[in-house]
Amino acid sequence: MTVAQILAVVIFVAMFGLIVSEKIERHLVSLGCGLLMIVLVFGLSMHSMPAIWNTLALRDFFTAGFWYQAKEAAESSSGINWATILFIAGMMIMVEGMGRAGFFRWLCLRIAKAVKENRVGKIKSLQWTLTHSFYAKAIAVKRVTENKGKRTPGVDGVCWISNEDKFNAIFTLQRRGYQPQPLRRIYIPKKNGKKRPLSIPTMKDRAMQTLHKMALEPVTETLADGTSYGFRPNRCVQDAIEQCFVDLARKTAPEWVLEGDIKGCFDNINHEWMQKNIPMDKEILHKFLKAGFVEKGKLNATDQGTPQGGTISPTLCNYVLDGLERLLKNKFKRYWSKGRQINPKVNLVRYADDFIITGASEELLRNEVLPLVKEFMHERGLELSDEKTVITNIHDGFDFLGCNIRKYGDKLLTKPSKQNVKSIMRKIRGTIKKFRTGKQSDLIKCLNPIIRGWVNFQKYNVSSVAFRYVDWQTFKALWRWCRRRHKNKPAAWIRDKYFHRIGNRSWTFSEKLTEDNYLALVYATDTNITRFTRIKAEANPYDEIWMEYFAERKNKSYSNFKFVYE
Image 1 (cartoon, rainbow, N blue to C red):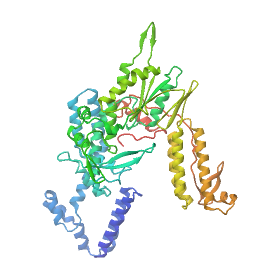
Image 2: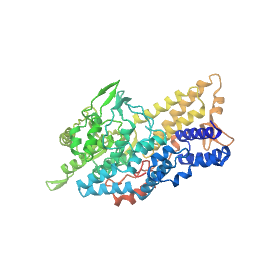
Image 3: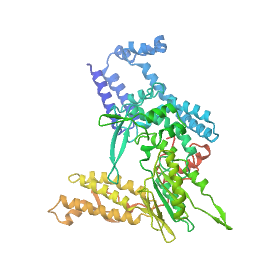
C-alpha cells in the first residue's frame, strides 16, 4: 500500500470511531476528516499531478454515462465515486429542505384537521402519503437510532450504528412485502418483586412502528381524553399530579377517590377491537400484533395484547383507553332533585394504565362508577385488578405516580410517597456500594445524575422534608463509605480528605481539582421548590390554533418534556 492509501484508511477509521463515540458532533467530524483527507492525502502524499487528477476523477462529470448510467459509471471509475457522493448530498439537501419547509408538520396538521371534520377517506390518504414519504422514513430511522435503546438489538442481533447503515435503512421501510420478525422476550423486575415482560422488536420493525405511529398520533391526540397524560407529546407526570390537585384541593371538592389499576393492560388488549376501531393501516397493524415472540429459543404466538417494548404500543394503548372520560361525563352530569342541584363530582385523571376517579360518595363510586368502568374495560378485553383497585377517602391519602396526595383539614398537599423515597435511597445506597474501591470523583459523577433526576421530578411537590431526609441518609451512607476505606484513620482526617467547605455548606462531599475548583456532590435541599403549570386539557400539538400556546410553554423553565416536531 502507498502512503496515501494508508493515510486514507487511518483517517476513515478515526472518523468512524469518533462518530460511534458521539463525543463530537457528526457533521464536525465529517467536515474535519474530509479537510484532513484533502490536506494529507492530496497535499502531502501525492506528488504526481496525474495521480491527483486520476483520483479526483473530475473527467467523469463530462461523460454521458455519469448522468444517465450512474451505476455503471461508478463501477468503472477508478477514483472518487462522484455519483454516490452527489446522490447522498442530494438526499441530504432534500431532507433538510423538506424539514425547513415543514412538510411533515403540514401533513400532521392536515390529518388532525381531517379528524375534526370526520373525513375518514382524507385521513387514510394523508396517512398513506406520510408513511410513504422519504422524509418521514428518515425521521423514523433517526428516532430509533438516537434513543436510549439504540444499542439494544432484536432477534436478528442487528443495530444501526454507522451512518451508512442508517441511510440504507431508510430504503428498507417498504410496505410491500413487509413482514415483521418475532420479538425478543426479556423480563425486568417490578417493585412488588415480580417480573414484567418486555418484547424487543428488531431495528427495522421499530422504525416501521415509529413511522406508522407518526401517522396515527395526530388522530389519537385529536380524539384523546383531556385528562390523559401518559405517553403523550408535551405532557408529563407533573401534569397529572397538578390535575389531581385541581380536582381535589377545593373545599367543595369530592372526598372519595377510586384508585384503578388494569391487570396486565398491554398484554390483554383485544386484537379484534383494535383492528376494528384503530384508524391506521389495518394490514400493517395486523402484522404488528401477530408478530409473535421468541423466548428461550421457542417461537410463541401473540393472540392478544400489544407488546411492551414496541414504539407504537403506548399510542395504541392510549387509544384503547380513550373515551372513558367522555363516558363518565355523559353518564354523571349535574341534576336537580327536590329543588337543589346535585353534583356527582366524577372526574378522571389517567396516566397510561393507572387512573383515579373522584366521586361525591363512596356508594356512588362502588355501585355506579366501578361497574361502568368494568364494562368499558371488558369490551376491550381488559380487567381491573381487585387487589389494587380500591376506594379511598382523601383525608386518608393515596399514592399516585410516585406522590402521596392527601388532605390535611382543608388543605391538600402532594408530597413524595414513602415508597418513592425508599426507592431513590435504595438506588443511591446501591451505587455507593458498587464503588467500594472506586475513586471519589467517579462516585460523585454517578450519584449526581441520580439525585438531580429525582429532585427535578419532585421539586413541584411539597418536598422539603423529603429532600432533607434524602440528604441526611446520603451523607450517612457516604460517611460509612469513607470510614470503610480508612479504618485506621481518625474522623478529622477523613473529613478533611473527603469533605470541604463550599459556599455556606461546610460538609460538602467533594474532590478538590484546583485551588478554587471542586467536583461536588449535588444536594437535594439546594433545589428550589416551585409550582408546576398544568397543560390545558384541550391543547392539541397538531392543531394550528395551539401552536403559539405550545411555543410559550416550550420557553418556560419547567418544561421537562419533549415537544413534537423536534
